[in-house]
Length: 426
Image (cartoon, rainbow, N blue to C red; front, side, top):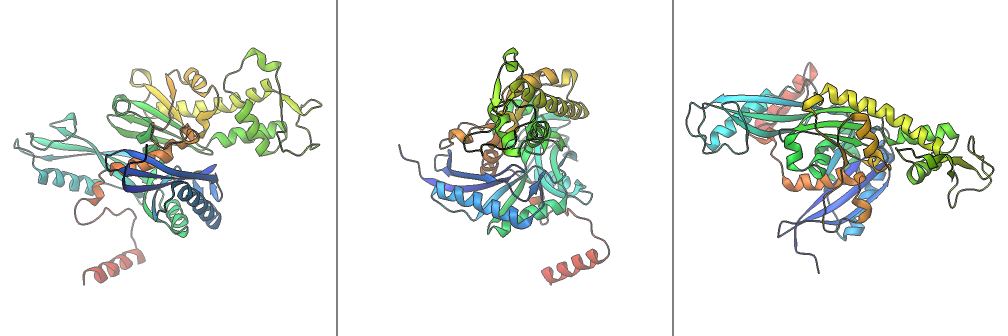
């Protein structure tokens, strides 16, 4: 069966510390999202979500996009970009206006959103998202569309995502240097939650733990929106480094050991199993691993012990972050773990025991054209970027004549801003 006619194409790039990946999706005339192609390559010039080498990052982005274009059989000129670092922070702004008991009109909603826009206090940081989550009528929550209803007071809860300006500008420049326009920079927890959480999970209360290469983002969803976010500077690459250090081996060997033989759950047979450090194609006769036998094999039990020790560190940080956001006791619910680190065998069982909460693995939704390799936790954010773009979410900064300022102006900055305004209007 052939593909239906594609009405619109969306491109996405997720710039991670371990992998740079790109995906192209098409929206068919019937409203179905179809994966047309994807591509990925090892990350370069990125450290814990920050661009550290502009030319290397640009090359990796361009290479990943070209691979996706080749697989899709089409080219793209603009992309939605995922960001996991840059000091992401989440806030919820609550704003109300008087209605006086009359019927709510479209102008009332626009007035409310303008008031919400003007209430944003970025404190010198960049606003990535400012989206109305839901409305309130006389304090009653859960109103999706207040048009035509009567109320004394109309309110809105707005989710605001902030980030440090300089790292975001570096990320945008790296993408633009790859000859691509940036539609928007999207916080990774927003995209990931869009892809692997159901509307019911976002409403009832769910913690999303995204374990990336060098950053783990812990975000809390409730009432249909993201309420809190904590970034932990620890990821799956740190576990790989611990394995490499303990055995005195190369990183690529440690990554292979972790991926092929590693687990978050120990078993009695682990002490009997010896696993090879060298894989097919590795140089024979290289230095043996620390504690290896004459065939350069190490005990699987020791490998798992190293992994679980690092996971214990991570789970302690995750637990601390969840408690700090009020996700504890009766208020706590399900935990969804995703990202590249979620592919480790037994990770859900380990975290369920460590956090004392039901845990499931988050994967992208079933989409036509989504290959088996991309239907894994590693590609949740990437798929979520395209889905998020297709939903075209409302941003209150687009309401009214001007966007909210996201930087402080002083001294020469004030003069520059006045000069630009004079050139624009006169």
